[in-house]
Image (cartoon, rainbow, N blue to C red; front, side):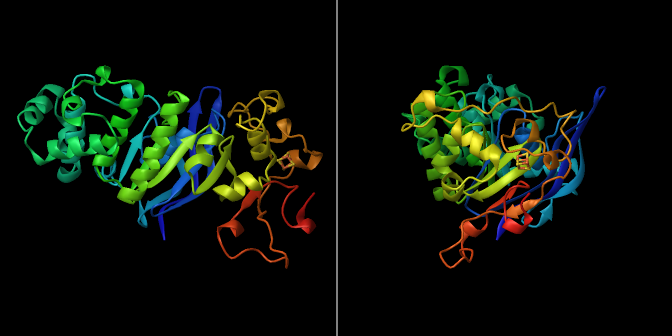
Length: 356
Ligand code: SF4
């Protein structure tokens, strides 16, 4: 059963130059206990989609259409107070730069303990000042919340968690800060963790450790994860299913192994061909020509057409619909499993009779 369902979501930003349709008619589902990847170049709308799901779209933007349902309950129909309570409870977020999310004036342990307490007390303490929070939490180092904070630091493999819990964020390395951020997010025992480029600022070894951590934590806590990244190798490492996003729209969706073995949309094929792999010499990498379009001035019909090596005149005239593109079995039928759930929005793919 789906934990999260996004239906026809449209998020736009009116600007003096025109309207930016940052997320356009996006459908997305995440089932309980799975890691779903959202991949695409910078500027493709991934983070705006994440913010729309979490209800933190910048003030200048608006959700113009569609719905976001968690446990079949519409998040868009909630009041601001209900949404605030849901964030940090049912939905937690981890961002690329933990320094922007961690409070520099509170110790790491205090912040994780606060997350534990918020989960149990409906979020009221977000209105308290750092000084008051420190007094409350500092006086409660033998509290259940503090013990849980130490446990969470141990879970994300921070060495000597009891002594590190009283350190401030600036005393942690980049990798440890990211782990602390994940510990804080998971301390609230969320149903859904949204991780937006969680490993981008880290070196490759630490990145691999954090990804291992996410996978282990998903298993331990049965938390579903939406993993947002521009890096396909990150997706290949941990995701069960993948959505590829381009210029505000999902253009391909498949089970992760199927997507890498059998990419269909020319954009996905371009992303894979331009992603460094251990078995591919760097000189064989083929970057996608051109840039992500200015979202104020998106090409009509297929947004990828100006960069697509297979584009025809019709690609500029007919908006592509989703077509089934999964591999068929030897007898020509679709497999009765996740591989059959593979679609791409391209006029030159899908059943032969429908292709351009
Ligand atoms: S619809 Fe045309 S331009 Fe768009 S991805 Fe397919 S072939 Fe390329």
